[in-house]
Image (cartoon, rainbow, N blue to C red; front, side, top):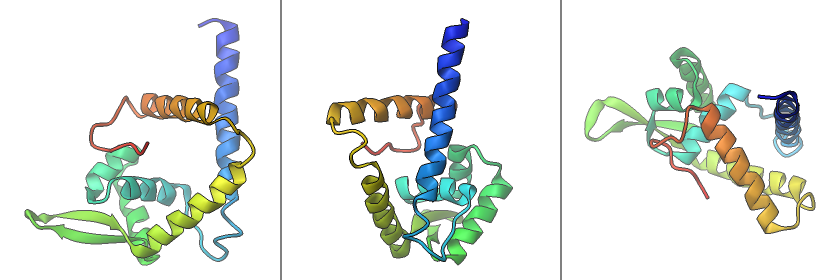
Length: 153
């Protein structure tokens, strides 16, 4: 990799981090008194995208160690955002599902974050290109496309 490419890729990573922090912080007014750690947010994202996922699969999907995933799940359950259900085919296995409260929170996040970004990009093709690039980056960093997690398009 040459210096120009290294500089471009560093700038891309730096901008992604900065934008992620700003987006995450923007939820505060709508969720006053509620908070989620970055770990809890990562686990909740997986549970929202793949209802019925196991804790082990959630740990793999988020690339977190199982003890951190377990702690995040306990906290999310205590906050009323995740519920555990015994697998009907294997009682030793527990499946994770978002609660109705989690669905309400996700709807509110959708409203807040969409409003935050409204006006930043008007061209749907430009937005689709940015989303596609970020999806490829996420998949590349996570070790390639995941077959156990469905992507929302």
